[in-house]
Image (tube, rainbow, N blue to C red):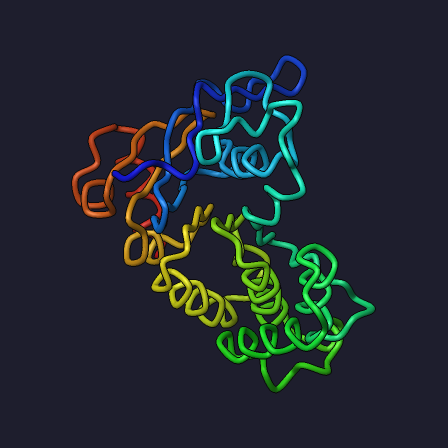
Length: 247
């Protein structure tokens, strides 16, 4: 693996007496697509929220290009511009149009002028199939459409890494494919992606690596072929059997 873009070292997160993450260690290389799978409550989303410092780790460290994001003098706003996040609840600005939702963060954080921001936004909205809706407000969109706008907004910031926190879990089944297709297209661009997901087909077909979490630890990780076809741990085998039988 080339020099990692993100390194997680001995990461631990507790809420009161409850330990949600325990001794998490892994690294992500530039351009890699990593899917994190596991049962609900296994710590997947908490791990992602620690990566973006929406939660502060209790112990351990997270390095971005070798620099600790927990250091007192670390430029957190700059980091969040470089490490974007797509949430399951979309988090769009309801008072803005689709186009404004994708333009405004570029202008506010990256200080792009309106013409640049608009051109970039229109290009990305075209890519995710949302160009016909540029003047719509979020209330006029379906969940799948909102999520594709949220993806375009995150990509518009030209991030080095994009974190996806169960981006399809709030969607009706018929909307899931459009969002997964947009993510699959993104994965071909060389963008580094860390995806918490219950979509096993996506994890298997699109990921370079799959991480299986259980009870706050990484129980097993490997290539999709290794993890899905030859899981070593009994708990991985049981999880996949239950999930793949349901699919």
